[in-house]
Length: 155
Length: 125
Image (tube, rainbow over all chains, first blue to last red; front, side, top):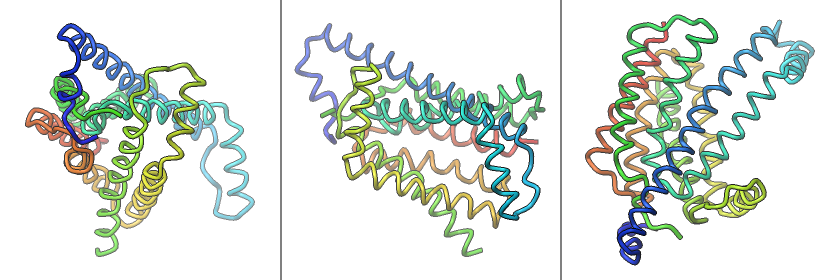
């Protein structure tokens, strides 16, 4: 697992190597895109669900029970949980072939998309500092995205 | 102060360490090439049989509860930007624990992302 991927790829012909690299890149980008969409969408759905649930009246056991009962009978909460589960599956799948040091920073795009969705759907105010942060994340992901997604040999 | 510091160390090292262990478990399974639902189900079942997966999930749980603990002793505006350090630790862990080749270009990208995430949280308004 720790030897460079170039050892494994040297067994392939040049066109096969090019084809494999392109396929791997497309597969990785598609899965990260799915993660980047699913994570903020689940956040927005959970937020909408919790808005409908309302605040917990007190820490009395009956109020706590009613709070969770209201939460888990709200459709948005279940949709949010479903999106989170799908996100985790996509995360596991992409880690089966791509570097963690590639996936982790790339998936940070979700932070930017969450802010953008909060602005567009929840009409939250985005400060200039936050827009600056979103731009830096995009720049960072662009830089990381130009490195090879897989630098270790696969089993 | 000491409690907050312990929580912070746990958020960074247990949280990121857990993700690194999960990554190691998935790499031991090998590249997933079949994306049909029943095949994905089989991959997940195989992953659950790898000890690294359970160690990783356990560490991620410790990281999550440490985050909750940290939020009880420090402001949100401090906690979340500070956790952007996990991107640097993640890249270092990828290099040392998973044997990944972290090039200077990737380090530069990680640095930009970490600063960007910190700004997004600080600028919450």
